[in-house]
Length: 332
Image (cartoon, rainbow, N blue to C red; front, top):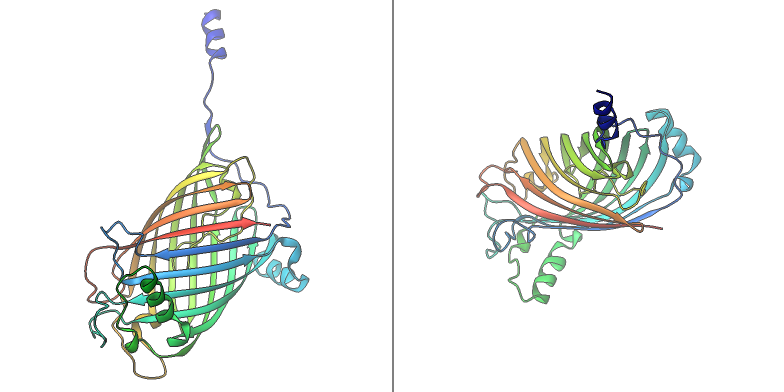
């Protein structure tokens, strides 16, 4: 009996336990630059789709915690409680097209041609296991967003067909959006160096661009999950933001997620607020599924996300629309 007990005691043990709460985030002086591209050419549809949400581009900067004005840090602590505060700035462009880009006059039953160009200022606050964001975006919807120049210029460069419908795009209109968001990080399992966690999130956006509420959930499997809150995405959609810290050697993870959006208004579908323009009725409820992977190495985070989306407007053709998102974030 003693020998049996000794043998059992000597056996290697695989410890699978509920992950403890991660320690409070320490001050972080590193700032982060991010470049991101989203495109329906990165699609599970053979040959890509080149329609609907066809392109998104973003350049962003997120500060270190020592670069935040005291007044903003005090405001963040008053609203969300104790934590570390960052600010961020980004500029992004989004392009939307119908399924048929060979016609010059808008099809009243298809998505209008539209482009958006804007900048966003955000305050981020990280607590023990949550990230809270409040952001304001301002920009333009319409020809001033340079969608025609970017899309057709690139298509001419690669000798692809140009979009002939830009003459009927949604006209110029100022765009203003306010957004509040919180993401929670909940550890589920830990088995040696491997971990599983979940990232539930809530988002509310209001303004002249899009009025919507969103609830989302990501599940991640990997190593060093406390290093971030998941990869970023151009909103709407689940996004963990650009700020990250490598808390361990070579953090990595794979993930899957889903979100649901209740939409009251979408300017890219409902058209111009100030005057008549091409429009189509938006879908009041939208669902998305996603899967992807991320790795952090030597101060660089590379992440890829594939998103499958239900119909966003009434009369949309085809099954689930899908697109890819690739981002690179670099710490300095």
